[in-house]
Length: 615
Image (cartoon, rainbow, N blue to C red; front, side, top):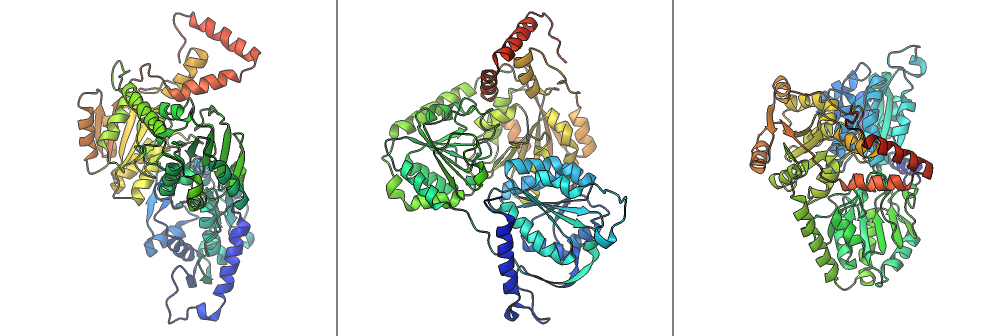
C-alpha cells in the first residue's frame, strides 16, 4: 500500500490524538461530545457502534452469532441500521453493492470461523474490483481470556489477509474506535478495497473511558513530475488522444468530460467504469477499445495513437484476456503505484488521484485545447448507428434473445435505475447495449467473477438507496447459488426486480467449451419451477417467453411496488459474442506449435462425430 499505507493513517491519527489531549477540546460532563467524537465510560460494543455512526455507516449487513450478540444488541439500542442476511457470502456482496452505489464504505459483520470463510468470496470480489468495505469480524477470546479448543477457532486473521488491503487486530478495548476509524480511511484511500477489523468477543463486553476524536483527511497522492510529463505529451496536437477511464474516475465525471472535450478525445471505459460518462455523449464510445469491446470503441480508437488511461488496471476481463491493442503512446494514471505499467507498455506513469489529475489538467487547458474534430464525432455517430441496426437482429429460434431483452429493459427502466449484472454470457452483451446515463448505475463483478453476486449486491444497494429503481439480471446457474437471498427482499419489502435468464444450463461455459473442445461437460442444470418457488417465498412471479409486447410487459413488472421474480425464457441462438471471439483468438495465438497441433487434431476428430458427447 505504497500509495496510502497504514503509516500515513497512523500519522493522521497521532496528530489527531495530540489535539484531543488539549484541555480546551475535552468535553466536560456538562458538555455534549463534539461531532464525531466517542467519549465516556462505555462497553467496547457501544464504542464500536458510536464509531460506525460517526463514520456515516448506512447499514451493517450480517448474521448475529455468539461472539457478536453484544454488538448487535447495541446496534439496536443506538438505532444503527442493520440487515439480517441468509448467508455471509451475501453479507459481503450486500456491503459491496451498497459501496458501489453510494461510493462510501460498505460494512459487514461476521462471526469467526464459518462466518469469515463464508464471506471470503464476496470480500475477494471487492478486493479485486477495488471496492471499499469494512469487515467487522469477531474472534475467539485472546490474551488472559484464551482457552484451547474454542468454537470457531480458525486462524481468522490469516484467513482475512489475502482478501483485504489490511487486517487490523484489536488487542485492547481502548483501541476499538481508533482502529475502526483507520479501517474506514484505509478502505478508501489510494486504490479502495476491503479492510478487516478483528475483535476478540470478550472486548465487546469490557468497559473503558473513551476519548476518541475523528481522524483528519487522508492525503491524496499526486506525482508532480509525472503530471508534467503527461501534460507535455497531451499538448502535442499532432497526435490523436483517446481516453480509457476506469472506476477511479467514477466520482469525477464532469472533469473527465471537460478534459475529453478539450482534447477532442473519444472516451472508452472499463466494465467497472461504465457510467463515468453519459454514453449518449458525442465522444462516448462504450466499454473497452479492442476486439472484445463495443464495435464503436474499436472503430474510434483505430484513429488514436495516444491513450490516456485513468483509474484503470487493464485487468483480464476488461481487456478480453489482454486483447487490448498497444497504442503508439500510453499515459497511465492511477492512485495505486503498483498498478502502473503492469500490463501495457507505458511511456508515462503518473501516481495520482484521478480527480486531482483531471482538475490539474483543466488548470492547463490552454495547453491541451485542440480544434474541434468533427470527423471524429461524425465517425462515432456513424459507428453507433451501424451498431444499433446490427443489435436489433433476433437470433433466438424460440423464447427471447437476451440481447433484445436487455435493450427492452433499458427502454423500460428509469434512466437512473441501478442495474446489477451477474457472471453470465449476457454480462458482455449488457456492457455493450445497456446504456448508462450517469455514474454508479451499472455494476458487474468484474475481476473475481463471483457467481451469484448480483442478487445480494442489488439488495444491499436497495437497502441504502430506498428511493431508487434497482434491477438485477442473472443466469439460472448464478441464481442457484444465491437465489434464496430473495427471501430477504420479501421480509424487508425491498422492491428489487430479479430477472433470471433461464435456459437450464451454464451457457457461458457451453460457449467456451464448444469452441475449444467441440463438446460440453458438466453444464446442464436442473429445471426449476419459478412460480412455485416464488409462491413459497411470498413474492410475485412473472414469466417472459416471447418478444410479443415485451417492453410493455417489462414496464408493468417494474411498476410493481414490491420485489418480483421474473423468469426470462431465453434462447441465445448463434448471436456472436465479441468478448469470447477476442479471447479465443488471443488464446490461440499464445499456444505453442505442439499445443496448437494437439487442439486441432482433437477438434477435427470430434467434428466428425455425428452425436457429440455433451454433458
